[in-house]
Length: 571
Image (tube, rainbow, N blue to C red; front, side, top):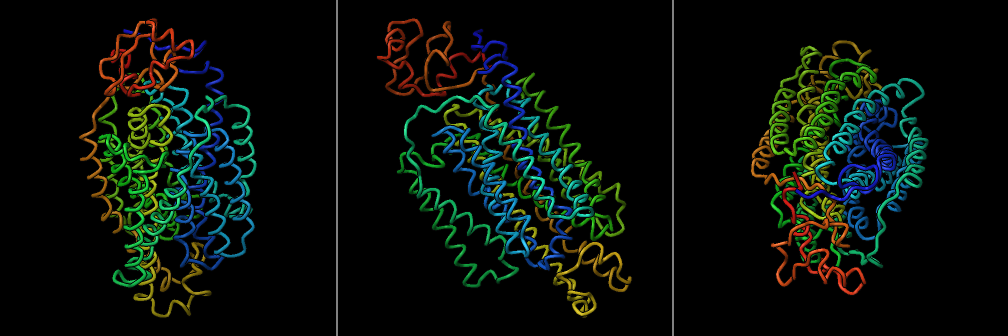
């Protein structure tokens, strides 16, 4: 069995010693915390926020605008990170995110808030992708499981801390501080990115930007999200606007495939789709994203409006979901690093997600709070065993020079699911709610000050039972049936993941050059090089020529074949 090169003081295959790796990882955690907190902190503040700004009809866009902008930017950050290096992009993403936070905090209306959230998303799309890709730059897949598990734990922590913090701020200094708090946290992440991240430098020269691909992906994604948001609620499915959005999505997708097959540096290379694991995890992640964002975005609102909890309490009631997700994600990551086995985890996780969604669909006004917490805990276990493992599977299928692009593409389609989930759930929820309120309380607009668009948990709590009970029932009946409709998607995800090829996790970081950083001196001769490539072993004349700068012994090799020169070293 061969042994991968080890940096002084580092673990096998890593490029940094333990201290440098710990500092770099701490910086990445700060960046991920900045983005993940922002995805959840408004969940408990949303009912009060939209009530104060009198924009309940635009509530869905507070969440969707951020997710849409971040989704569009994910492939851009991933590809540019592979081309020009990830550190400058991470610095720019943090700065852009902070700018969006300032705009959101200063807004006086819903339009300004949506604009600020969009700017935040343009930066936030890079924070998660670049963090996941940076850890792949310095840690091999076999060791990466425990780091990815901790990163998944950051999402779980944020999903607990976010609603709690959002509720506390809403009831205390005000919801605007949910944005102001990003400034000191962003400055800390910025300092970490600048001073704690000694990353490998890019040596690929001046990049060729796929501007056409970037534009088409923005147009297609926007059309798709608007289709999910407006279809059947704001506009009939056969209306000219909806038909136009369908046509726009299809045309943009077709043109995107055409362009990507002909450009020099495609933003999402089509060869990624030749890998079975990439396809399976991407589609499964899209399905799971729909359910995850549908619950995360609107469950705290449900708990406030239906269960009568205040903003802080509704955040606390999400703890079972996030606590179980934190434990499962972290423990699962360590298990994968220790054993190298991972296939069963996302399959089991998807089944648990489906079961939890079915259970949540049975909630009613009279359901005990503890039972709802149990259902949320089951959902957290499923998510913790699924999300980060899918990223690891993708990263293990490609060399590190493509890992940013592959990671971003996989996350892009997952975010598409999340965007659609948030948009569709929010749109259907809002449409059903307004319809039920109109049906059950014909005079509610006049009976409630400001109308139904100005309803907040506090306002509902102090209404007479004649008004309060129909409103609470309407909120329950508008949301819970939606979870039953999306539960089969998690079942489909579990079925797809059964066909994953459980490739052994690499014990070294796969690079295309130079040879000595990839293949140890005692490695056997590669037997599965790309057609026309001539196998060369370090220490042979060809390797000596390469050392002199005349020949690159890996110039013609398939990168995955190089990494596979010692299957035994992967275990």
